[in-house]
Amino acid sequence: MASPTVTNYLGTGVNPHLYLTLSDNQPNWGSYTIDYQKSGNIPYDTKNPTKKQWSTWNVHDQNNGEGNYYGTITLEATSTGATWVKYVGGEGYYLEGLHFTYKNNTYQLTVDKIVGAPSGESPFPNTPLATPAVYENTNTPVVLRVEGNRIVNDRGNTVILKGMVRPSLEWNPQGEYLSEKDILNMVKWGINTIRLDLNQNYWFQSGPVDEMGSYKQIINAIVYHAIEHDMAIILDLHWTENGHQSNMANKDSIRFWKEVAADYKDFGTVIFELFNEPVNIDKNVWLHGNSTYAGHQELYDAVRSTGAQNICLVNGIDWGYNLSFVNSSFHVTGENIAYGSHPYNRTSFGNNFDGVLGVYPLIFTEFGTNQLSNFPNGYQQYYQAVIDFIVAHDVSYTGFAWWVEASNPAFPALIKDWDGTPQYGGQMIHDDLKANPVNGVSE
Image (cartoon, rainbow, N blue to C red; front, side, top):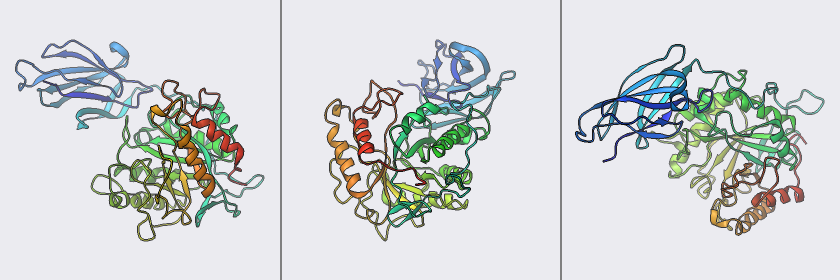
């Protein structure tokens, strides 16, 4: 008989990285430790499975019960479920706002605030706070807007966006392998856009933007460097929950976009991608939401309620790909709207974009193939089909992903090292950027 499980979502996994260690317990199970975002069984009496049995769990910031002690959590469990009993904090190190909730077939432990946590280190310790992009040698802001089916700057010049997706801030609140050098290596490819994948929980848990090493400071630093190199930046709501993608933005995403929009409403080269990949929902939920999910109209309205007029990017259903239902009578209502799609594992697109092409700007913020069987050979047809479509229809794009993972080219990882050496689909994107170069967004 399986026992209930508990999953450690205490904090963000860094500064501090908290571990949950089973200590004393009534059924006398042996001690073990649960790492961040990992799960473990909650002890119960196997001989009398309906009888509640207590167990205590110590919280430390080093593995195996070492490091600073943040207190002890007590639970009770039978073979079919668990209940919260109490929490006693440590001295100088403790947790505020603990939550014990059942979700996705496990009991999740989360916390609102960690007291005594060391301050974070930033991958951008010397980067000043970002200010809005301005035209060279002027104080005139650079503002991107939608004009018909084009993105233009306020000098009336068409702007085709071509760039890279930079992941890791969706699963790690300080990102991984981020640096000024990393951004410069992207710039060398000739891109004019960075898409930044975000996690709304990390945003909510972040310290202020001027706190070195906070989630908001790291995002702001990347915005700074994008502006420094005359690039647009797409802030993508990639994950709403820690550890995995969700079907759609949730009701908390309305707050997320209000906060992000308030911070960046004066940044005319910052684009808001309202949700990464809607899936397992119909078009009505996609547009209007329901009791669980926030629809794109709600997310768009949340942005505009702050006064922000930034371009909003709206992706389709079916993992972001399907836009076949968008037409003159069914769409997100508003201005400065572009549509996004993720054409993976496809060599033709049917009528998927008929209601968008010629009406709105279209941006492929992910594309190619993410099937391992297409590597090292077989990936070419998918990238070539998308690139041919991009060139024929003046579609903008960001390649997924500027990421190194030798064991999993189907991530898909477009570079083989952090110097930015292209591989697989990345080589084909690199070739397109040379054959069909783009200007900076102010040009």
